[in-house]
Image (cartoon, rainbow, N blue to C red; front, side, top):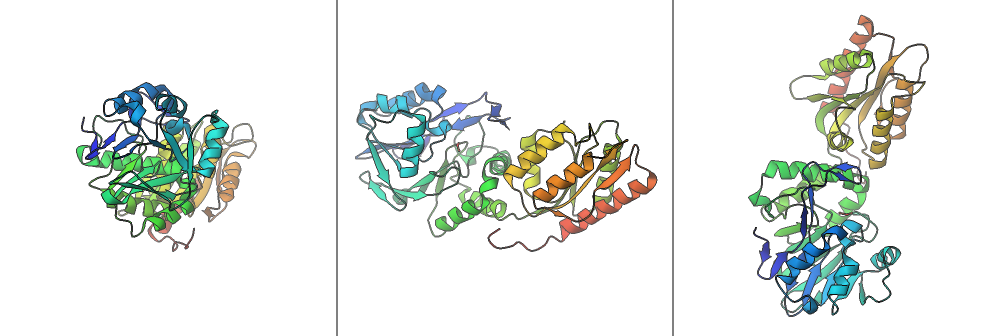
Length: 400
Ligand code: FEO
C-alpha cells in the first residue's frame, strides 16, 4: 500500500475494516483512523488512533523512525477515535511534546491523567517549525468539537483536516485517485450529513478561513486522502453547509396495515416527473444514516405515520429525533398518515416537522382506517406541490 504523501510525510494510521456501528452511525464500508508522520529536523506525529489500534499505529511509526525520536504529537481533535491512543503513544515516545490548543488540553484532561504529559499550548495562527517544514495551526471550533483544529503545512500546500472532508471508508488504498471516486464522494456526503450537518455555520466559517489558502492535498482523519480532487470536496462542503438543495422529494413513512403506505405511494406518484428525483423510504427498511444523507440535499420531504397507541410509530419518532439534532433546515414539508378510533400519528409528525422549522405548508393529511379515493387524490395533489416546491426552492438565506 502506498502511504507516502510527500517525501518523509507518511500515513501511519489504522484501517478498521469491521466496524459497522460507529456510535450509531452505520458504517457499511468500515472506516480508518488516519495519523501522519512528518520526518524533518524535528519529527511530528499528527493525530493518533482509536485505542484498540494503538499497537498498529506504533508499529507503523516504528517502521519509519525510532519512537524515542518523535519530538511532537499534534492533537487536532480530542474525540477518542483520534486521541484514544494518546496515553500509550506518549508513554512510548518519551521525548514527545503534545501540541494542541487550550480547549483540547481541557478535553484531554477530562479523559486522561495528563499530569505527566509535556504539553505545548498553541493558539489560532501559531506556527511550529520542524526544519524545512512548518506546522501552522488553524482553529476550527465546532468542526467537530469545540477544540477541533486543522494543521497546515504551507511548504507542501498540505492540510491535515481532522474530521472535515473525511469519510468512513476502509480501503486498501490511501488516495482518492486510487479508489472508486463516486463511492468515496458518497461516503464523504454521508459523513457530512451525519457528523457535520449540525455545524453548518462553523463549517462555512472554516471554509471562509481556508479561502486563499493553497491546498494541493487534504489529509483527513478518516478515509482517503484528497490529492486529485481537493477542490471538488471543498466545493461539495460549501454546497452541503450552504444547504443547497437538489430538486428532490422524499416520502418517508412507516405503516401497519398499508393505509399510510398507500398514501405514501400516491404522494410519490404525484411528485414523480422529469427533473424531480422522487423516492419512497420505508423507515424500518432503511437505516437512519442513509435517511439523514438523503435528507441533506432534499428540497421537500413528506413524512407519514399511522397512529399507534395515540402516537406516531416509534421508528418515525426516532428518525425525527435524529433529524432534529442534525438540523437540516429549509425543507418544504408535510405530514400524513392514518388513524382508526383516535388521532395521534400524523399530528405527532406535524408537530415534529414544525419544531424543526421546516416549511410545513399545510395541515397534516389524514385517512381514517383506509384512504378513500378522495384522500388519495389529495395525496397526489400534495405530491405535485412538493415537486413544484422542490423545483422552485426559496432563495438561500445568508448565514443560515
Ligand atoms: Fe472522528 Fe469527531 O471524531
